[in-house]
Length: 506
Image 1 (spheres, one colour):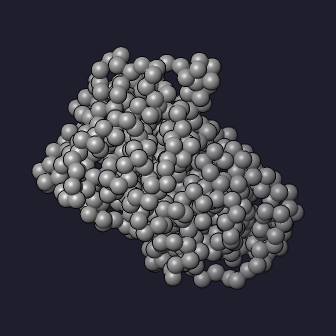
Image 2: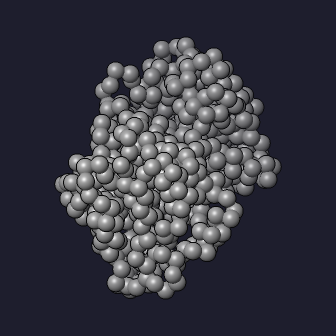
Image 3: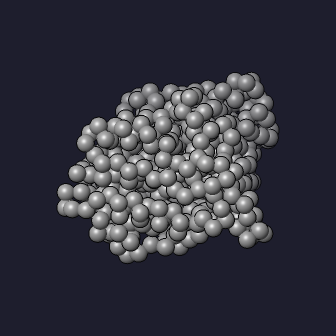
């Protein structure tokens, strides 16, 4: 018999689990929902004595009361902040725990405070400053009804459920977010399942990509003891998809789930697969971190700078400018008479957007200064997570920028990815784009969280009268060029390139 212990996240109590718990119970599982001290919906219940250890003790009490015997397997489920007390308790009762399930939350690390789960950069800074000035300070006020989105996607939550979530929310004791998590070795030996919520920006595909890059923080996730599921909903699936969540929890408890491939497996990772079009084998001319693919043509030529996505961990080899897909785009541009440009920028983590944006600006100036380039006819083409850097060029486009393009771009920061400087919001910056032509390649099988940013951008573009040409790839996934090397994909690449080069010829 499986005994589930369900631990809620910030501001919430046991009530959020009611529907999911009922589905689990109807399947024959034992269910225990945690009401963490100070977070049971009772106003004023929290005090400045409540910290992470208090909540670890709450979970330990549930483990100890869940019964004993070989026929009882305890599965701990933590949502958001709740993952921290789950991990803390698991290490102290490892012999009782069959599995840990982390619900739409990155696994906490030893010595890391739960403040890491706060993805809003301004709020993180505010909390850290307040704690330093006031010796931890007062509790963190619960969100107003229209502010839950700040803590994760509310996609799929019924209006009545959002009303109830707001009405029963409690202030979060600040000490619970600031006290570092202390893990024992026993916790690291337990099987773990991650449940990713697509509308919040998470997906197995994106995690696998980071593992393929060799991201040291995520390489351990390729351990065969770790499995993954996805749910097509926002950050609160217990409210938006309670039956689907229950089914996933039962399957996870049974040992099912997707396992990630470790680097070096038989099939090459998506970023190292070949470009889908036949293009000339042209060698790039390298200067610093910039490569120019020059056309066989006289006179200064227009240029297209291809801005890779990310984050890409530092030290990844080959670096992005040598990836087949980016080289393919640059060679294709050169074959059509323009200078194709690939370069590396330092988007190594979500905090690195300002640094990477400076690299983009420096590359633009270097390219425009080259006498073989027509400095007044430049296009910028952003890919994936690099799309956020389009904000700098949309807000005040210079006269020489003749076109801005994006392929499966992220057009607004995604909470699940971590803190991002508020400057990088193309959905806001497009208000200043004026007559700048925009070419956007949209894939039909995009991760919902990214797809939502694209639709928000298109809505904002329409509102402000910005000309956006959308190149649709209905059956394409993120990185469709290498993931889906079909004729549909090839035609989408051709159409987007024709459009961008057409704007450079004017």
